[in-house]
Image 1: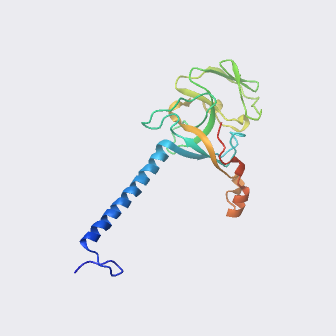
Image 2: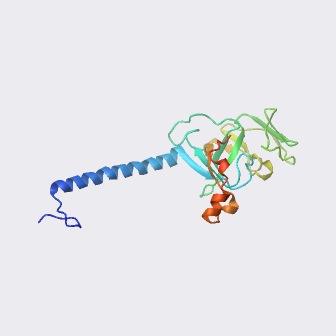
Length: 214
């Protein structure tokens, strides 16, 4: 007796082969999609939600930012470029925690640079660099002068009064850099996160969506 499907249709050996082929084809597509998504997440694109005011006004609390993991190399993939002064980067906080915490800050100085902060100004190799995107440099901070070690970076938040950065915890190892902050794809104030859908739509900062991070 020929096997049949649930609706009584007889499945011939030829039909069974066709069904198996179709399942195999679809299975291959699904597997490729899963592998592709894993590769993208691991090596190409990531995301981070900004939790604090440390990068105002460049990034606001509640901004969700795409990370370009290819920029500085990911895993066995070669770097497209090296970290430059002024880059907004995402990195693992340099501690021994089993659960990594990710920060987003601006690279101010590279390995070999001389860094000094005094009287509300930031000097790199004796030249002033922007310190606080809205002119709110922290005037009570004195740092250096000190030379950044090779293979390390010095990072600051754009809002120095609200930022926990290299002034407090020291230099950032290059190996902890995950990628460059690329673009804001979602922006919702913290106060609106627990509201209903309509309230969230109203609270959405639509003008920030698609903003390139610089």
